[in-house]
Length: 241
Image (cartoon, rainbow, N blue to C red; front, side, top):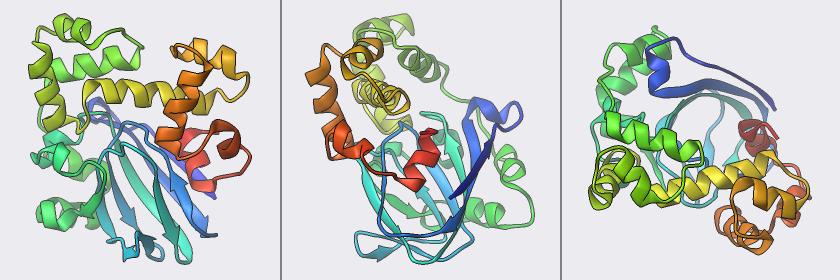
């Protein structure tokens, strides 16, 4: 697979982590792992299947609490917009919790945005035209989680919100509870740091190696040893493995 990505210009980068393109030829079922983000994906190649269903050509993908298996049917040519946690909400104005664990045709949620993204303008121009400010408290909490901040109650206090209010805001704007997002961020650190499990567990903030393996099994569906024994062309491209 040939994968490339670039960071959009300011101020869009406050919402969008990157815009990526993946090209190649499909070779069987691909396991995609949670990374704490939502995406809009435009398919310019052959269709993909998931759970026996053909995915739409322009779709929005919600937060993934665990892995998702998809199957390309031929030529792979995808353009993706990977939003920061909470970054998609200002563009859709739909609760992110409604998309968690699945995907939908973007046209069923926002027909105008699908039309603009599929039109002559590039993704950046289409998004800039309808960008709204992000929730500063949620964005600050996400930044603290990504830096490896500690307990969620301390994060809530740090952004001036009660923990329950922060939970509700995360459900609406991020699509995951703060604690789950923190666990996925930690899991992604393991994917990028494959090696000595005991040392990696300590570096990524796990209690011990067993704790790391339990989380890995939950998010990836198998142990780290089993997962890293094989190549995963799409997932490896997305994680930089």
